[in-house]
Amino acid sequence: MPFPGGEAAALARLKHYLWDSDALATYFETRNGMLGADYSSKFAPWLAHGCLSPRQVAHECRRYEGARVQDKSTYWMVFELIWRDFFKLYCAKHGDAVFLEGGPIGSHQSWRSDAQLLQRWKDGELGVPLVDANMRELKATGFMSNRGRQNVASYLALDLQLDWREGAEHFEALLLDYDVCSNWGNWVSAAGLTGGRVNRFNIVKQSKDYDADGAYVRHWLPELKDVPSQFVHEPWKMGRAEQERFGCRIGTHGDAASDYPNPPKSFFQYGGGGGGGKGGGGKGGAGKGGGRGKGGGPKGPGSAGPRGNGGGGRARAGAPVRGRVQHAY
Image (cartoon, rainbow, N blue to C red; front, side, top):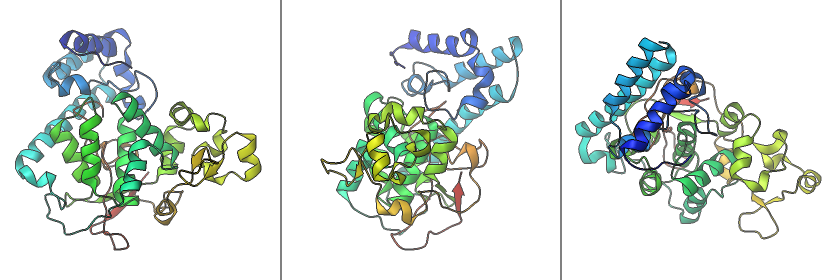
């Protein structure tokens, strides 16, 4: 979906999403999508650049409720705008602390330094389909769904255990809807530095839940275009014969003889391959970002408003995570 600049384009999108398509009426059910134009409002780029105000969106939603329908979807759209305001107030309270390694809580946790692994995360070359697909979308378009942002942030901070600020800076550089408070506030949450509970996303389960047929993954990862749904979320499970049959050889990153890499060892170490405990989080994720139960958390990293990510917590490699860890599903 293109994002032309200016107020006229912003108002046209607002009109389309509410009045022309009636997409607002099903927002609650579709907001966790990743592929297509109307699974979410995608107002965030225009909100971030001042082409559209949150009060305009809220006012139009109230008008829509009076003329069409008032339901969970219309409530949730305004609720998303409130989370946007929350992060502005959060950053006003904590100031420069949101940019520090230890975040507002002054954590003494240390982070791994691995430039090659970080670059693979940025390029969508990790071998973890859901993460790779979202990172390639970001690189190509400057946009990523809220669901995607939650997962890639959680993976960077909790599984790879790399400095969360690298992720925040990467989002700052590429997001069309970059907003200082939404971005850095949500990455602080993704890194588990708010003092609240810490959430880790089960990446494979998230992929199967929100991209069941693999359409999104295949769209952004042409290497997997012929891999069936049975393996598209976990291509490393294919045997040699299956790899040949589906035209996708799995191997070491950078190996010219392979089409798609195996995931890092930490993926299996921390349960990304299907493990992980039960617990909170749910389909709203943390931050609509880092987890809060079904649908109820702040936005995700970077998003300036409806609808953008978040993540989990983290600790020193090999050390226990401080705080209560919730595995978000």
